[in-house]
Image (cartoon, rainbow, N blue to C red; front, top):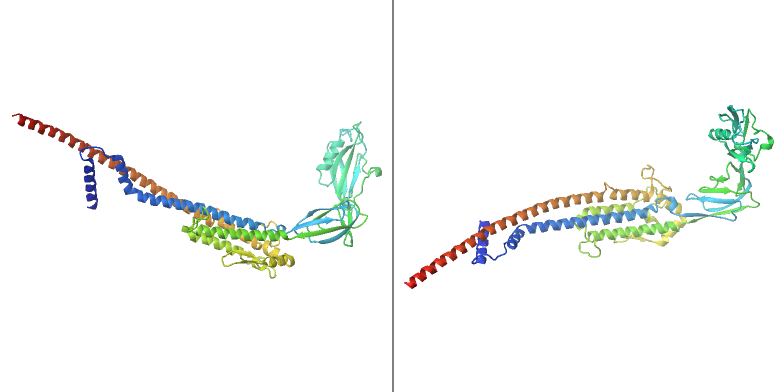
Length: 479
C-alpha cells in the first residue's frame, strides 16, 4: 500500500508540475528516482571495496616491514658476519697470507721457511720437430712409476709416435703427470718433451720406453721432487707437498714464496664491532616494525598513508606482531653458557614494546664472551641452510619464522588473497546494482514518456473544446 500511495503522490506532483503540458526534464527526474532506490546500497558496497583495497596496501606494508627485520637477522646468522679477521705480516717477501676467514684464531705467530716444495721434472732428447717419427711410425708403450715410498706403476700407450703424440698420451693418462713441448731455438723446429710430476717428495717419478726417449739420462733430470719445510712458533720440521698451507693455522691459507733468512711475524687480529653494529641494526628494524604495526592498526592516525589500513583486520596483524616479537625475544636453540638470548647481551623491551640496547652490557659480552654470543646467534656456522636438521641459532630460527609469515602460503599472503576474493564478490554485487539502476532508469523514462504523451493529448483536447465553446459563444452573441 505504501508503494502505491507513494507512486500516486509522485504522479500528482508530476501532473501539477506539468500544469498545462510538457516542460519537465524527465531524464533528470528518472535518474533521481533510480538513484534514490539503488545508490545507497551501491555507495555502501563501494566504501567496502575501498576499505578492502586499502587493507591490501596495508598487508604490503606489513610484509615489507617483516622482511626488513629478516634482512637485519641475515647479518647475524653466519659466524663470518659477526667479526672480521685481518692478517698482518712483518714481511711479504717469503711468506704471504691469502685467506683469513671466520674460523681463524686471533694471535701472533712466528714462521721460518727452510725449503720450498717443488715438482720433479724430466726432459727428453731433442727431436727435429713435433711431428718427427720416434718409432718408425709404429705405436709403442711408456712405463711410468710415480711415488717415492710406494711407487705406482703404469703403462701409457702412445698411438702416434711423435713428440706431440707422446705429450697427448701422457696428459690423457691417469698418472698425474703433465707434459708439454719446449722449443729450444726460435730459429729451428727442434723440440724436447718436458714432463712434470705432482708437487712434493712423493711426486718423484721415472719414465722408460722402447724406443728410449732420453728421460732416464742423468743430464735430462731437472728439479727434484721435494716438500716444503718450515717452522711455526718454534715447532720444526713441518712439511707439506705444496707451498700453500691451508691447515697450518685454522681459517688461514699461508703461501710460501721463498726461504727465509730470519723469522717472519704474523699477527691475526679480530674486529668485533661489526657484530655490535648488526645487533643495533636489528633493534632499529624491529622497533620500526613495531611502530609500523601500531600505525596500521590505528584508525585515528593520519601520520602515514597506510595508517589504520588494517584496523578492520586486527587479529591477523596482531598475530604477525606477536610471532615476530616471540622470534626476536626467544631463547636460542644454540645457547651457550650464560648467553641464551638477546636479553643476555643487553637487548631488552621497554613498556611500549620497543627494544633498547644497553651498550655497556653489549660491549662487555662481545669482549669477554664473544664465542658464546656468536654461538647463540649463528650456531658458530656459516651458510647453514634452513633444511639442516642441526640447531641453527637464534638468527636463522627467527628467519624461518619470518619467512613463514611472508611466504606464498604464509599468514600475510593468505589474508591478502582472502581480501582480494572479498573485493571480487563486492564488485560482482556492484555490477548487479548498476544493472538494476539502469533498468529502473529505463522504466521511469518509459512511464514518464507515456504520461507526457497523455498530457499533450489532454492539452490538445482542451484547446479543441475551448475553441468550440468560443465559437458557440460568438454565435449566441451574434443572434
